[in-house]
Length: 398
Image 1 (tube, rainbow, N blue to C red):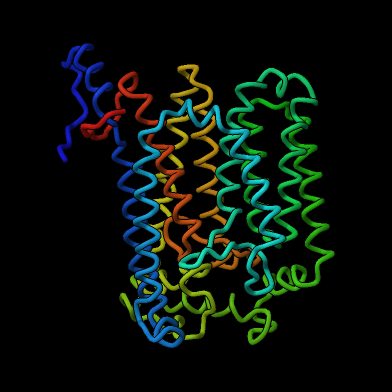
Image 2: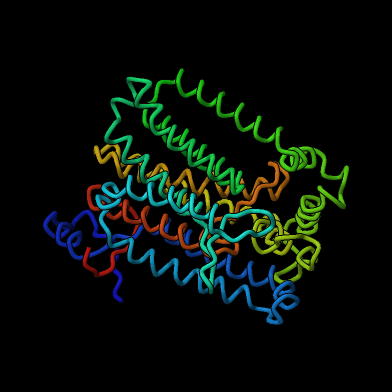
């Protein structure tokens, strides 16, 4: 497949128009960051899971091959999404949210229970987690709502409260699974999008306080969540029980120092650190690649958020409001989930069952995050050539 550099300033407007009709623009910064995270994630999952794969499945690369399949499916679907116009997502936003809502209801009735949580549909070769689709659906729906009801959101309490009622119902379903981490990420993304949509500050801060009190009440009235909070505050008080996972993660960070112990050299992955290839992949990565490796991964996530916000700013300045709010929402979704996972690994936040986007083992998260990144790339494409940016073009029907 042939690639072309973005046309220079000397190129005529007719040539630019012809390029836009016949080619797809791909942003360098965003696409390179996503690809690097996918590659680093595959290597990290392979290293972190090799011992548990050998012990449980008799095949040292069992989880690696499955993760590679997840990546291939995610990239394949993302390639298709890249060719779908953003207007299509604006039209199906409400339907997509309703579909996600129904899946959340069904998973409570028909889902498979794993470690005390009913979050997955067992589909034979792989499991599907509806909460991952719900995160994307909420962003798409809210972006459209802020366009359709923008004046109502900014000028009345009615327009502000209606989407929050829907999100609250979804949050309750997630808490019944239970999936507290997904509920928190969706709530934070919703609040930020409403704020960016121009909601009145008095309403916003009142809602933020009420939501904080509600989440605190849920945490303090649930014994196992309360135990997580107390252990998070001082994991060394009980390092062999409730604080075991966090203390082992902190030991991994300490062993990594500046440059790490070397790829494959982690000790904590050898049955010391539970969920080493899923929720606590970042701790193993920092043990093997050191502080510099961890900082590099954080910078890659920061780049994705930067490009998302950059696209959003340009789209809104061009009065392309849906694309702008969508880019804001997707950047927030990926950034908040990465921040939460890394914070949990480092002991900055209480333990939650959230994967590291584009890296941790898990098919649903991988596929839906790839689709989210493809939507961001599509937003960037539809902004070109009105705002020229570093990127490449490839021949395709758009």
